[in-house]
Length: 384
Image (cartoon, rainbow, N blue to C red):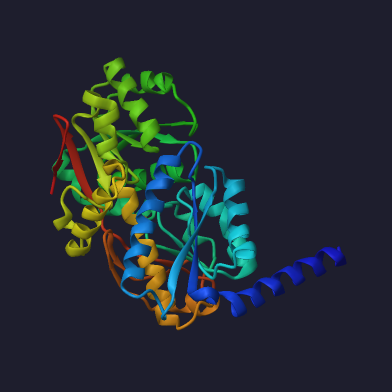
């Protein structure tokens, strides 16, 4: 036990020394990026990473930060929570990054969070929406994406105009999906909507006909679905095949372009909660940056379907760069303190962190924008 404690202490001391001595060596400031580049949600992780690269190139073209170029050190968490924790430790201990961005899924982020506490290194959370992330008492977490609760509260303004009376839920069986069902149910009930069945599915499942067949017998007028775009595509096709007739609303920032491309007519007349609307860049709180981002994404030949995901990676890196500049050094504790002071006009809204969680151990939570778009005849249209 004492030997293990000695090794742990030595490792932590070595990591701290590396931060102070080598974070800016070679004229670069390293930023760790922990994303699912392979596995079941690899497409989304790669889109976020591409957005991060666009931001890093833009920042470096303008002179970098503190006179140094920023360097993204990218690690694949393989769509797996254990690997997400391992990737976090590798980035901190091996690559000596003083700050990270990650880790897409709520489950992966929750798995990574103990490592942030252990090594005292901050992470900007760009996608994960489970309320637990900012309620657990981790002062090294700063989230720019909305919580499930925030997304549900912002959806409230659409309940009456859409005429929603009764809903069912079909969600992925993880922190993200279960949290979405819980928070949306709460808001809907508070606003006079009846909540029927809540069913779930494994993240890797490809056949959801059993759940959809159960829901087909419901008298609900609306079905809320929360899952990744790949599984969403299968769901829409299977729902069409079973003749499921009701309004479908997806949460969590699904990729409508991908659904149009891969689900075809099955995607028609579905509604989608979006955090960034590349089809309507004027809706962004930073319209000029939105237009630049869309143009750069297209110029690089990246799949246009992924722009809503990429926007979060772009905002995450700009937020981190602003914090490093304000901190005046690539030092984890100074960056953590600076994150409380940054204000960034991003693609997904104004980034400014509010305190969330237990007193004295608060995490940072920004309040991003949300929008609802609809797919009509293979086209994305505004609903507001």
